[in-house]
Image (cartoon, rainbow, N blue to C red):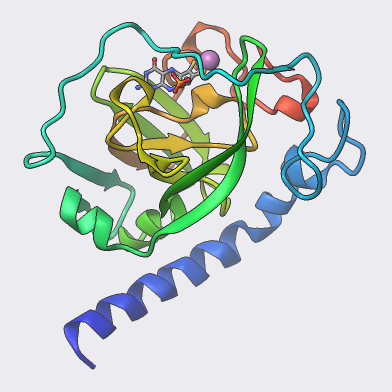
Length: 231
Ligand SMILES: Nc1nc2c(c(=O)[nH]1)N[C@H]1C(S)=C(S)[C@@H](COP(=O)(O)O)O[C@H]1N2
Ligand SMILES: [Mo]
């Protein structure tokens, strides 16, 4: 086998292993387990686009962040994946763009009650990048750090969902800086604060660690279909 084939085989094996370990937990999350979620319809994009309870639809895309826009230079930009992993990873912009890319529609629900429906995102599945780093047996949580100092956290069973993307393109255009470009996380089945703009560092953890809003009383689970906003 060539080095490339070898690498690919390792990533596939790591993905299968993660899937095996987290399949039951993933299926038990509210967005997949609730057969009658709150709100007007099905829990996520399986069916017609619908809006979770307490949300209104906006055509405009508000900007929500801590107020500082980091300056990012793509020639030195890197995404690091570290912590409870067998192979700590540092991806350059070119390397990130060379990974398998997907384009998918999803909805964006902000806890401040606006939802932006049917956004077309292009990027790399977070599950793909996590698998490349080969999470250790102990890995159960993910902690995200952004260039503006923002942090947020997810359990692996949410982070591994196939609609969780590292997005660089939205509705056919490069993701603008104010929305987290060059690269941000999107979590369509959770409130949008769980998706870090300007993502820089992804840490796998054995124990959960609360992020910026989670430390300030936002729900750690953040399920829009359960109106699960604050803890
Ligand atoms: N780095 C970073 N990511 C972040 C935030 C932030 O302040 N900094 N805010 C979060 C919140 S509260 C929301 S609702 C969405 C908003 O994304 P938008 O500004 O593209 O609408 O980004 C999330 N990700
Ligand atoms: Mo938000």
